[in-house]
Length: 116
Image 1 (tube, rainbow, N blue to C red):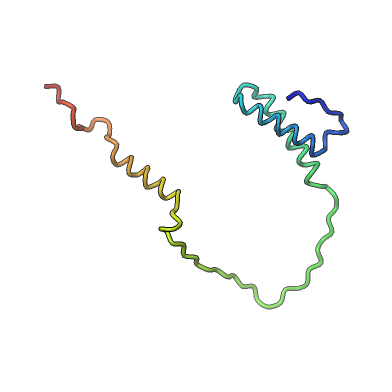
Image 2: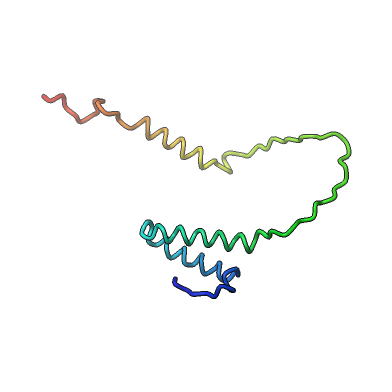
């Protein structure tokens, strides 16, 4: 952190790499430097925009006219569940089983007494 750069060097991939390294170091101390993290994120976004999103005028592609009617295709893909289980469904099923087995407030469970 604290790497100083010239104004000329602020739109280079190396500067972006330094910013990302600084951000990684800030993440070790979450919610400590809130405003500094925000400024760092804004600078990262600014550099990314200047590096990767050129504002130059793009030529419009001259495409030929389409031939034939517009067609939408769709295909079903069957995946064997035994070889490729769905982890989201497994977690959902586990959560539902835990909710069913969890005693509710006010329910009588084994090992509790009626006050006798």
